[in-house]
Length: 257
Image (cartoon, rainbow, N blue to C red; front, side):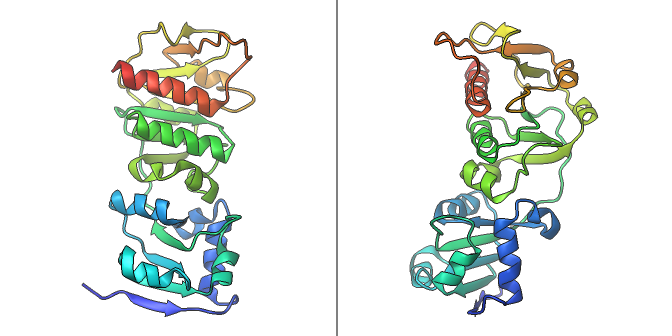
C-alpha cells in the first residue's frame, strides 16, 4: 500500500485551493468535478464508518497534529492549510478544521423493488437533508429526486443530512416517466384528501412521494399514486413542513412493516 503524501499549501491562488473553494461553496460544482467536499469530524467519521475512502483529506494547521495523533490518515493525499486559508474555503460560518474530498459513486438506476422516497421539487436544502436523515433512519434506502429538487450532494444538503447520504442510494434529475420503473406502490401525501395516516393500511415496501414546499405533489405524479395519505392535525394548523410530514409518514411505514 502506498504511503499517504502530505502537501502544505499557503497561497490563496494555488489551483488546488481554488478548486476546493468552488467545490465547498458552489451547490452544483460536484456534478462537474464528480466529487464532493464534506467538512467536520462528524461527517468525515460517518463516511469512514460506511466504508467511503476519501480521495483527499484537508486539515487546518492547528488541527493537523491532532489528526496525526488521533484520527489516523485514511486518504492517499493530505493537504495542510493555514487556518485562515482553510476558513476561506469553508462554506460554514464557523469553519471546521478538517474536511474530506470524496469521489461520487457512478450514477445509479432506480431499484424497482427498494423502499423508496421520491422528492418532487423539494427545494429547500434543509428540508431535503432532513428527509434523507428520516429515510435512512426508517429503512428507506433509495431516494429519487425529480428535476427541480435541491441538489442532493450540495454542501448545504450534506450538512443537513448529517451523514445519511453515505447509507443511501441517491438518484437525481429524474422525470415523471422515470417513476414507471418502480414496482412498489406509490403513496402521495395530501393536505385535505386521502386516507388518514393513523388508520391507513400501509404497504411494504412502498415509495413515498413528498412535494414542493408551496405546491405539494404535482397532479400528474399524484395521479400515479396507489394511495393518497393525509396526517391528522388536531391542533388546527393548515399544513406541516414537508420534512416534518416526511418524518411522520416514514416512521409510520417503518413501524407498520
